[in-house]
Structure formats: structure tokens, C-alpha cells
Length: 276
Image (cartoon, rainbow, N blue to C red; front, side):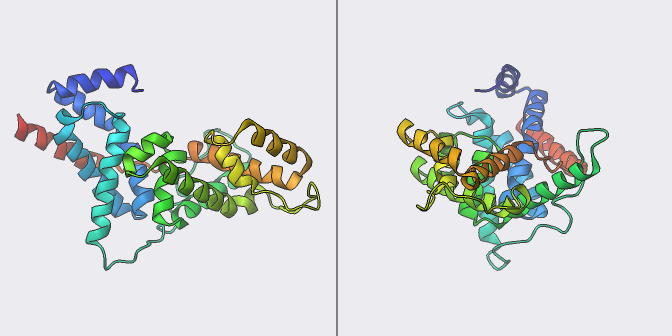
């Protein structure tokens, strides 16, 4: 549900208040830019997608009826522009590496005097997370980013992508497992340990992911908890996934360059002037 301030700005923007429209889009631009960066995997493409998406939103806001949240609507627009850009760039490499140093550049702890070792470990985790997300196939990456980074619900992710909720969750579980696997050496250096029994362990990472989505029965949940209580290795695996998801929500986001912000605002004002 949108915050009261967002609803107020939305109503004013629909009524033709240019300042309200600018403020509304300014509130959303960092999330759209972050999504575009991770989906496009190249900062220049992400900058184009941000500008194209916000301009499309400025032109089409009168047609937005609130069937979904504003952020969901904007992510849908941004995703469409990312796909178009990918199709236009068909002769470019299908996967573009992150710019050198971008993943951990300007990563500063909010603590004014952080412990050096903790700060270094945090930067390594953040950089590893960016690499892990970038390394996902696109169909998994967009689901993971929308659900676990941007915090959309599974139905909202389905609205953005046009996929079924079942397909969303299937891809999400795989993406979570792959990202956890990539970060495991930093989160749990010693992944070996005693097992609960001679029987093979269940796929606790997938079970825990399904548990987070509310998709396992109380009976299965109880069995999983019983197994985790007796198996340090599986318990550590679940803890690592929990840490990954927490990191997704708290890791610093790339800032929208000031020059790009001004470029977008100038373009939006031009659209408004032409419409007025």
C-alpha cells in the first residue's frame, strides 16, 4: 500500500501539478535505477532505461489507475525498456561484466568509526553479492532482484513479469540457492560438519526458501526444524541464506549520478511543457 505522501503526490500529479509529478518520480528514481543496473548489467544501459522509464511514466501517469502499486508499475515499464534495449543490442555480448571496481566502490559503513576488519568483510560481502546477482541467468536475476532486493510480493513480481506465481517461486528458489552458494565461502567458511544421521540431508536451502514463501505445511516445517536442531551443517546453510536475504535489503545502492538526475528532470519538464 502506498504511503499517504505518495498518494497525495499521485493525486496532485494526475491533476496536472508538475511539481508533484517531479517529486513523485524523484522518490522512485533510485529504485528504478538500481533495478535497471542489475537487470541490464551495464551502467550506460541502466541510465538510458531510467530516463526512458521515467519519461514514459510522466507521459502515461494519467492512465495509471492504481491497480498495482506505483513502484510495481514503474518496474513493469523499466523491465519493458530493458528487454527492448537487449533486443536492439543483439550483436553485443549477452552478458556484460560489472565495471571494474563498481561493485564495491563508494561502499561506506554508516558507522562513523567501523572496525576495519568488519568494514572490509562487509565490503567483500557486498561485492560478492553483486557478482552473484550479476552471474544469474536473466530469467532468475530479475525474479531475485524484484522479490529479494526490491521487496515485491510474489503476486507483484507476477504482475511485473507476466509469469505465473508458481513459475515465479520456482525461479526464486533456484536463484536464492545459487546466490547463497556463491556467498557461502564468506558466510560459512567451514561448510563441513557433523550430519544428523547416516541418511542424506534434505535440500534444506530449498525447503527454507519455500518456508519463507509460506509454501510448506506445518508438519514439514516441524520436521525441518527437528533436522536443523540436530544438523549443524544444514543449520548453517539456512543461516547463510537468511544472511544473504538480509544483505539484499541492507547493502548500499548505486547512487543516480547528479548529471543523469538533471538530464532526466530537464526531459520531464520538456514533456510537461509540451503537454501544457
